[in-house]
Length: 473
Image (tube, rainbow, N blue to C red; front, top):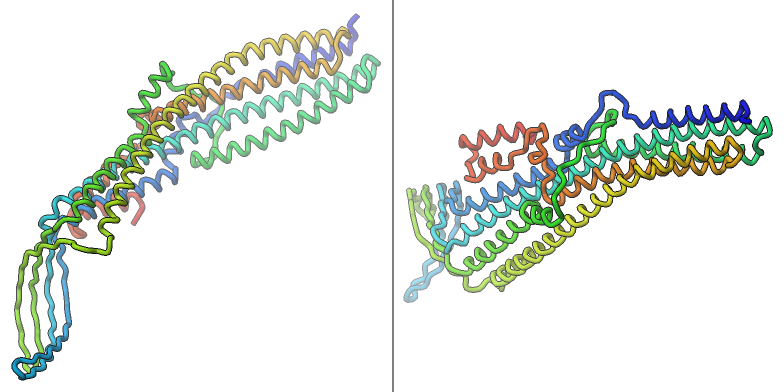
């Protein structure tokens, strides 16, 4: 016949078990969601700001390359002293002349077989490559935010599990002590329960520490401390097959597109460098005022214009070395493109498999929890009848806890793997995700600087306003 203490122990275990399950239900409170985390990361990322600035620097390189096709006008002041010694049929003449020139000098490239234009086109390809690099950085920033959000959610649930597990074990300890007092169990059973309570307390402390670390990573990745995160994020649409995912990645991944533009830029630089080996034609002009001092003072208003053709004949091997260097750099970019394509394909495969494994683990966790709970309830009931020991009950309870822990881990892994697959295809960007943010427009600054506006032009004033808005002035 069941004793009063035995019945009390069962009621306590049932109550503690129900509390443990209730602790897994998300709290109804204002909470951060994944969209909030992604928006925060996009708006506050220093890494994105750094690479946007690098993109603006690449934009300026186009303006610099364009300027080589335009005239260069300088204000020049030149003070010059000349001494000449001549001997004509025994007549020796010494001439000492000092002059001062003030005026304008002009130099304009007329023709270099298209080398400078090719250099400008190479810089334009570099800009396109840098834009894709910026998108790749954006994917990294957003994926980090996804991982940080999932980690905080996982650790919150883990703390809840450990806290309620500790509550359950304390109830078991009290029940074991009560049964010991009436002689139903031995001191060994009490010691086992005490040991498990101490271990549960340590595990709770570890879980709380892990939650603090997860929140710290969240603040770093998102730009602010997390609120209460209590909602599982929705997953992106499932891709039909790994082959489809690879096909999308080959067409969209920013790393591949960046390397493709880098290869084009390198090929253009090879052509540009080859043409620098040929002749170039320049227009050279001077307009100014000269004063000469050579016994008598002479004032001259002078102007000159000339067309000069230059052909490099020997430069110590520098020109040939530059040409060979440009070809080697082109070959290196082509090899890098092949590597990137293979790495991207492997990344898609890995992400696809990781997602399938996480989903399988999550599905199996439901059956594992169901079976572990049935086993726990059965062992606990048998223990009240004397057919099971306290150790059996503690082991069954630990198995249930392990199953519940595996489930929340599998759920977190599924979220991260799902977004890793999106990133592996090159689709994890603020624009494609439809985030409620002002999408950074990489063409805005480029369109203002691509024509290399002068310092005091209307376009220059527009640039100043843009820079002020960016907080760079």
